[in-house]
Length: 347
Ligand SMILES: Nc1ncnc2c1ncn2[C@@H]1O[C@H](COP(=O)(O)OP(=O)(O)O)[C@@H](O)[C@H]1O
Ligand SMILES: [Mg+2]
Image (tube, rainbow, N blue to C red; front, side):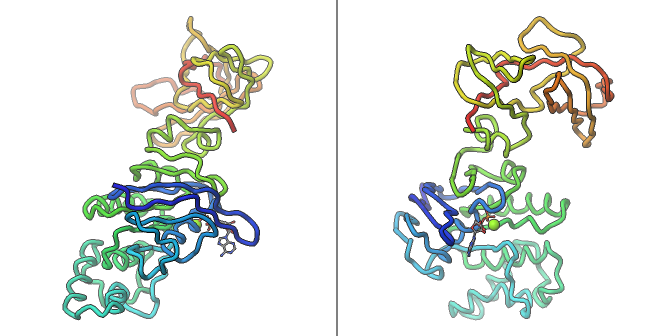
């Protein structure tokens, strides 16, 4: 069931268009992510949904009602800001209780609810602590509890993990997903981090300069990017400008690759894990001779930069204990690329 719909949203700042023709539909219970580089309009769109910014064109529908002009406080939407925006001179309890006090709820109800949500974000016993004495991760949880205690139908999270260090970020990512599943709350999550988006989301909307270029499941976005921007932004890829004709991609005067389909485009994309390093050239399409140029070990993976003539290819291999092939810089290797692994794309 659709909870939120955005229709033809447009917004400009100082004559610069920061959102254009955004159409999206978000379902009840979904974990939906806005993904895109910094400055592409994610926060602005979140603010439009929350009611802090008015679009110059288009409409916002919530449970089929047009709420485009409804003030923020009348919307059943909770927002966690990127910098958390906690009240610095209040303790944890008062921060979380703030919204309920404003709504003039009974003292007993407030107490019960604040306790419930502090427990939920694993901050039991923190109520008297001043928020300025908390770590980034703890502040993050207070901000989350402060939103959740209002029991919004829609939760908006603006890059909630970006201020945390790597280990804490991984942990909070798991907790956030778990919490969302437990509460079943419809969530819009904003990030510029593709790994976050891929691991957390039911569906992702990818933004490029204020335009939503693709909506899909993480699998769809990764395996069927609609254009070169998405292929390059989501996951690592080898992206080349190519002349496509007769089921072939001509990359330069020495390298031509066979393709599996006759679609048209001006770029090809090959994921680094789809290029195999082999011992000898096989009898198959797309067999190439290359030379190892760089090697980087990143724990589970080994990343190679391999030159095929003047063409630079990134290749990733699992760093397994049993695989004795550790290729060294300068070593000649054979490469194999299956035609079906080569995506043809437009810019
Ligand atoms: N209040 C504002 N006044 C002027 N320009 C703004 C304002 N808010 C955002 N912008 C501009 O709009 C663009 C999109 O910003 P934002 O939505 O914050 O992007 P993101 O969250 O994707 O990084 C940026 O170029 C930003 O500078
Ligand atoms: Mg932002």
